[in-house]
Length: 163
Image (cartoon, rainbow, N blue to C red; front, side, top):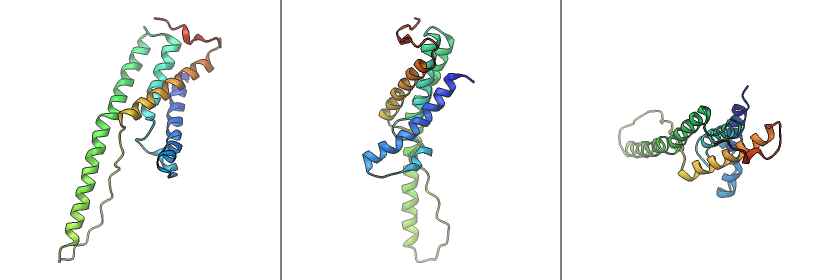
């Protein structure tokens, strides 16, 4: 299988794992479930696509079709992670607060009303711009380290970019 794919998947896993200690230091709350969640710092979406794009740039060069495709795809993913998905998360917050309001109204009624409480929607779907940038930086670092570790000639080929 392609080393770039392995590195991108590794980067996604590492970014998800790093979210746990970062959250702990910020909020003093241990939440291992963040590994399987969306949102948070750093963006694993950004990390994965940045790792792949960096690895392709260093392995194949900047003027290649592979790099161009990966870069455009990566930019779309990062835009989506902080744009569309973030807006969906904000809409979810409003829906959940409306559910809370409806629940309060029903409690004040004199009629007996039985209904299962709706499950709250997940409120953190997307990323803040700084989380996307953090993921991108994390991904570039993993891509560079991955390139250096997989290079047969272990010289600092990072400076040999083909333009």
